[in-house]
Every structure is written in C-alpha cells, then in structure tokens.
Image 1 (cartoon, one colour):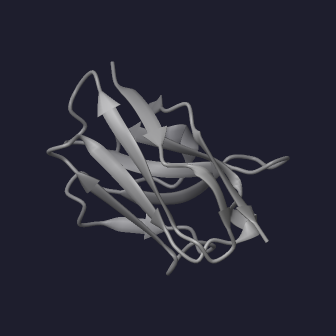
Image 2 (cartoon, rainbow, N blue to C red):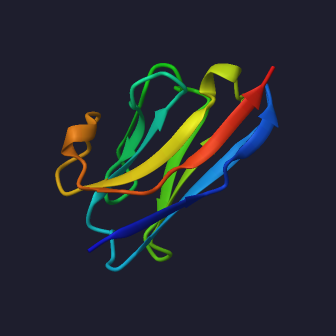
Length: 123
C-alpha cells in the first residue's frame, strides 16, 4: 500500500514561488507515473501535471504551462512541483497521486492519493 504525503503549501502573494513535495512511503514508486491535481474553492478537482517513472516525460495543464515544473527524485521516493509566478487563480488544495498506468491527465486513472496541501495566493 502506498502512502503519499504532500508538504510545502502556504500563503503567498501573487508573483511568488512555492515548491510542493510529495513523499511516498510503504513501497517504492520509482516504477510508476505520478501526478499533481488541485481543487479550488467551489471547483472540481483538475489536472495540473504528470510525470513518467523516469522523469523524462511530463505533461502540464495549459493554465500552468511555463510557470510550474514537475520533477521527481526516485532515490528519495519523492515528487516535486515547483510553482513560479503564482496567481490568485492558483489557490487550491494540491494533491499528489500515483497511477499504475502510463502518464495520465484524468484523475480516474490514479490509484493512490495524498491528503492534500493548501496553497493560497493573495492578490
């Protein structure tokens, strides 16, 4: 069973940066694709970014492309999301997840989820 724990969220101003971490435990996730999703107030959960097992293939939502960078350290069993030039519309609870499939943008293909970390961006 995979346990995922997000960290690094907080309250920042527009234009600031944050780096989220997702630490996996229970088993190694180095063979699996992983992803970040977010859910803003009153909104449905949406895809943010995904990364394959090697870190060589990544996909981003159009809304974050060029501002966010997903990466992973398989030695540390950890995934990251570097968020730059944050906007108030990035305010959400950010979740990390593991999929036993190939990289995917739909949440229904993800098997394990963290509890989420709050990111709030003030204008």
